[in-house]
Length: 369
Image (tube, rainbow, N blue to C red):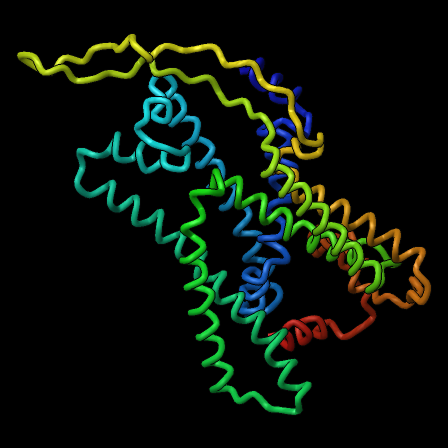
């Protein structure tokens, strides 16, 4: 076990597709957009009665999410160990790695008439709940950030009933578009990789903009906008380049030497199949034609976009004229380490920075709903 752990710690190159560092650091930055700045998360935060309840929801969600991710990783290890000697993809039983979990459930629990159906129903219902949240969030963004400002620009009032109708219609339209685009999923490769790649390219720059405003007093709107554009362009460039020039990947060793077939004799005889079921040496890897940056693991996309957005945004904010002075920035808008400490340890520091009514933050949170 120590040898395995030591080997993983040494695999620290960003071009390594899956390593302990890419999963921890890159995976964390990949989840930041979902937990912090994603529209679905923000809507759920604002649905809470107070900011204390919103914070409590995050702290409760964190260990539960870590537990769920750990179970998924353990499930992957179990499936790999189960099929290490009889790879269903090499044996032409399934076409893609995304199909291996349902295949494993039916293979192991297929004799039961209840558990496989219940498991698959739970699996797909969880997916549908996530999709429905995304559709509602898209409808809310279009309504609040595009339609209502357009009506205000034209000096027209948008009644509540019409706004509700437009919101439902938008959700229905986005749902139909999602169903239509789902047919392209078979051409996008692994679903998890595609998911992290898209969220890294889109969410990484957004996290960079928020952190730019939280961690520095020199940030301004010009730097934030230019940094956001640069971060998105760089992420899009890397993502498209990796699709056009797919980097070589190395997978865990598998074989089909343990597969069995049924022979029609006096009984069913399980025989080891020697023909076409032995491990063959991998062909020599051709020279990679793309740029080195295209070989970066998809788990690092969010971090790269975040870093580009933050650095470019900060540099532009410092050199651009007309920016506000650091003394003009409200201290409540900046992150401080005291926020992560218990209330008893950070009370004095908070009072020094907030010489205001203690209920003002709560009133501000309620006004956002």
